[in-house]
Length: 481
Image 1 (cartoon, rainbow, N blue to C red):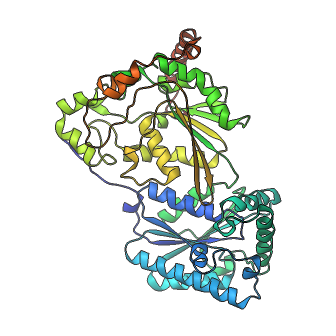
Image 2 (image 1 turned 120 degrees about the horizontal axis):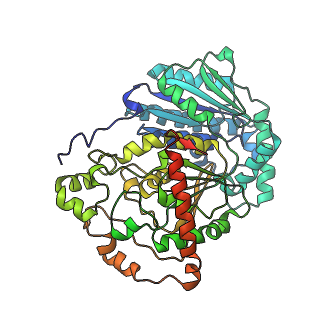
């Protein structure tokens, strides 16, 4: 197989050469930092060079834990230090643009017209565009939830008494309210205004495609607390045999994982309402069978298409296509199987999934290794060259909880053995049923208590999957309730 067009790199950055300063606007506790880091994470995931410049981080270099009085408009020293932090952040951002940066996000309150005018003047002088993103919220419950999260996540209050932190932060908000000016039409700038977590959106004077993409993404965001649960399907027959791709059934241990999954998820989800998504492939549908959540199947969640290598072991691929086997290890993210897909292709087809995940509440996704690597990389900001090499083990639930200053991760492992499908870069192709790891795990017995009812449940699950597959023939590709 001749390696044709395997290293083609494409993305939105090829379509639009503009350089944009995204200027966050809003009072404290309105989700600005959360939105800022989501914008950066989303753009980097799509191969666009993006970076956040958090003015608070610059200010903390001199005043790591200031009281609310520091933000009082009558505090001239505090005003001088806050201005110096903003100038340092803008200076670094402009320098970064000069080095080829594409989208810089200036994360601060930027609460007055005077401050925003100054920022725009600095960008205009260098030929960079400005897009103002304002988060407004007068929903007291939402604001209070954000304030309460500050006591555990903001560097300004590390080690402080939680009640004292909340009181001080509320006083800080009142200081900002004295001078706060919402972005208006009279400023003659491009802006998007997100009101009460996107319940109302106002857009003004959009200039180009990239601005449109950023605005569309922000329209799908919300700042209310929620979690996401990720799981691969249970161990499949192909996993045991060391084969990639296919639409194989679960192995006996895979069915045992399916039975154990509701209890495993309940450990972290409790009675929280959850929506469950799977791919359209049998092994994910079988794995999700015993979960009693509302379910959707997504074609976009199907496993990476291995093309002519589908159904082969890595050892067979290395023997039949040695040049391509090595080429994939050289650049696994961009390598595209002949007649199949690359990791970059998966990211492109997953973009609607990411939009829906950002728009939704608590979601659980049962899908495949390559797809989960891409989703995990999005939420955890993993670089592209590393994401295809992450180990996402079988029979493990990963819980992700997005927060303003990062995403919290927890893992819950089922005590059910499974083969390892992980192969390190440039490692031997011999894996699966023939590998030491797989051979060792394959002989591990499943505890009797875990096997009870597995065989009986297997027939029911298979019958359900067959019925589902028949229905697929009557529907178009896409999301199916």
